[in-house]
Image (cartoon, rainbow, N blue to C red):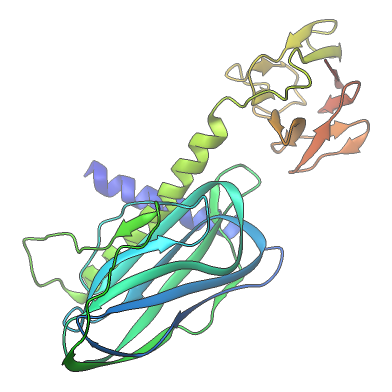
Length: 322
């Protein structure tokens, strides 16, 4: 029962964050094959492509195939830094998910999928669904909206004559094996297969979320240029006190669970966050009123420099320094 509840929560989460994510520009995903004529025993290689102006931190795709005609072998990402997430595989459906701890450019081939031909047949490979994942404004994994699926079918003609077997293992560290997961029930109702596919997609997005969340919550290395950074409270709760930021990210808000707790009625429970990146420091707004030198930082982040005055809420003033 707990496993079912966990899956349902994953689905609910994936749908909710997907609604919030927005693309900077139109993006598309499509499927191609180098050739469509094969002999029995040869390796079929198909490529999943994507074009996106928004850097991505993961992707998922599902390819439907005929298990009496083809045997799925493996899939590999063609984008450096993308790590495969192992998911249960169903016969007749390739389910692949990849994630990266840093944004990656998706302007070309995303992944290659390999199959082995089993005998004479004419069949199609169908890209049933695909998604690109980003980190949203709250730091969580979300599906990039506005992504269209272009060419989704590849027609294959397989001859009965025996061909020369080719290696199916690509030279990559991000290889996912696609052997179907053994099951004691050989016949699965169609409605159950649909439900399983939905759960696998949710599981892939949830896996990407866990990876990105883990990276986001890990202590970040301070820039080499300045180690002893402080926040001096100029006005508001703890006025006159300095906080040394030994570990980043540093969360600021009214809730005592924060690294810096400011008991001010105009500051929300989790108001802002200071983090390190690109050899510098940044202030992120988490939903409250946040300003740097009088300029609003609304649900985004801005660079912090020594001497900058940060205002939280109506009157809490903090000076960033090193």
